Image 1 (tube, one colour):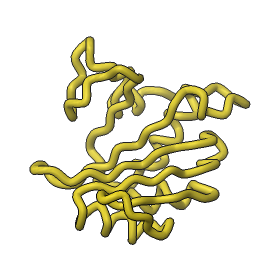
Image 2 (image 1 turned 120 degrees about the horizontal axis):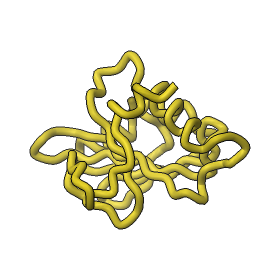
Image 3 (image 1 turned 30 degrees about the horizontal axis):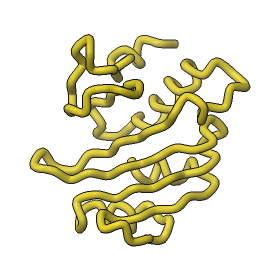
Image 4 (image 1 turned 90 degrees about the horizontal axis):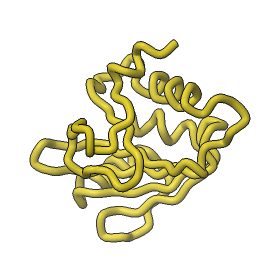
Length: 132
């Protein structure tokens, strides 16, 4: 999955869990996430859809997971933004072992998998699969 995200970016910068810079390379990013329990990347010009996009790799007691973050102002609005984001996520996750993802807005719950009414989740992969 990290490969897919990084390959969509024109450029970017990454750091490990200690804040040390690492090369902008998906393999090194994943390795840093595993070895320091966290890695962060800021990607620019992603898929012709986002001006900026953040990628966090976390490792906790449940194992590794990837958090993708963007802000509304980072979505390039030359087409329907929701439909474009839905297609982007569908493309990222197709033919992978990803079984869950959540899209939420700011001021949201930070509990993984929380989809309660106050969680900030605006749609889930199940919802995305029903969008044309």
